[in-house]
Structure formats: C-alpha cells, structure tokens
Amino acid sequence: MKYENIIYEVKESIGFLTVNRPDKLNALNAQVIDEIVHALGEVKKSDDVKALIVTGSGSKAFVAGADIPEIQAIGLKDGMDFSRRGQEMTRNVEELGKPSIAAVNGLALGGGCELALGCTFRILSENAKLGLPELALGAMPGYGGTQRMSRMIGKSRALWMMLTGDMLDAQEALRLGVANKVVKPEELMDVAAETAKKIAKKPSLAVKMAIMAVNHGFETDLESGLFLESALANVLLGSQDKTEGIAAFMEKRKPIFTGK
Image (tube, rainbow, N blue to C red; front, side):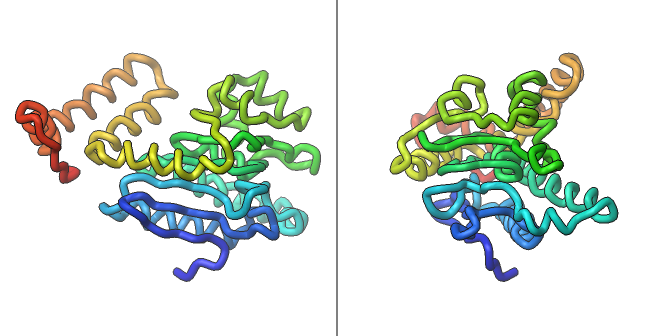
C-alpha cells in the first residue's frame, strides 16, 4: 500500500509511524485511519520490528482530532461504521503484541488523544496537551476515549474532560498517570527511541506475554487474571528464550533471543 498521509519506516528494529498532514494539524480522516491500520498490520507481522513509535509531523500537533468536514457529512446511516473503524485502529495498536510508544509532540485531541491512549506508553513534550472536546460539536469520543480514559484516570475525571472540554497539560497528564514521561520538545524523539531500544533488547515472546497478561487481565477479576498470568508464564517457561536467557545469565554473556 502506498502511503499518502503517513510515513512508516523501520530503523534498528524500531518502527516509526508518523502522521504526516502538518497543514491539517495531522487530523484523522477515513484515508488516514486506513493507512494507519495497514501500517499496524505491517508492524504486527514483522519479526524484525520489536517496538513502535507513533508521532505527528511538525511541532504543533501529534494528531489534532478528526477532519471536521468529514464528520459533518456523516449521519446515522454511517456513524457507527465510522466509529468502529476508528476503534479498530486504536484496538490494533493496543493489541500489537509489541510495545507502542506515543511520542506526543503537541496537541492530541479527539481521535489523536484516543490513538495515544491505545499505545502502551505515552511520552509527552512539555508543550503537549491532551483533550476529548467532541461534545462541543454535538458529537462524542468514538474511538475508545470514553472507555480508555475513564479506566486510566477514573470516571469523574474523564467525564470532566469530556463535558467541560478542559485539556490535560503535560504535567497534569504525568500526575494522573496518563503520561509516562514529560521531556523537552527537542528531546522527545530521542527519549522515545531510547525507550524503544531498551525494550527491544528483551525477548519478544516475553514482552508479548507480559502485555497480554496486563491487557486482558486488567478488566477481569483477580483470580481469572492470576490464572491467565500462570498460563502465559507457563508458555515462557517452556520457551527457547527462557533457556537462552538463563544460560546467558549463568555464563555472563549477552543472550541471543529468537522469539521462540
């Protein structure tokens, strides 16, 4: 697939997905979402890509919501399909089986905020802001924002954001646990890449199992989560990577992991 609205490239086992519409503040439309979904499929199936960094082009916006004219044209007939396609995008990034890092370089509003919430981690520039302002347009978050934000910061805080339109600045996002780190704008991509490389050194199967245990166990009861944890831990205990990891530790050398 030829990408017109995003840039996807791989450097040193790290995938970089950049929404590239700076003149539109990297706003999402149906074509952009299709391209992101396709690129996420490339990331998922590639054994060479160990982690993904998602960001926006330019210095003003990560992704500043959706294209207003496109939303204006959507009615009851197509609205649910439109929302479900956006949810597919955020679900796919959440379920890559590989860590994803949102490098938020400016405004992350509406669908952009929802895309960032779907990522495993969020590293914010000091000038970043996150918001879910759709209610002001007579709409509402439809790409997972009502669910992920409320799970992340609690129902009352999430509803405050949606109903008032107030945005989270970088420091408030860090305090609430939405952001993992806040850095200077010029350091953002370097810190994101360093984080991705640190994770990429870990065995990919163990990383995948840990993400699955947390993502799927978080919403269930403790006993079911513990059962899932044991099942996934059992997979790793029988893996070649575990054998190699322990052998390398005992022999005081760097391990060579195969993802098996």
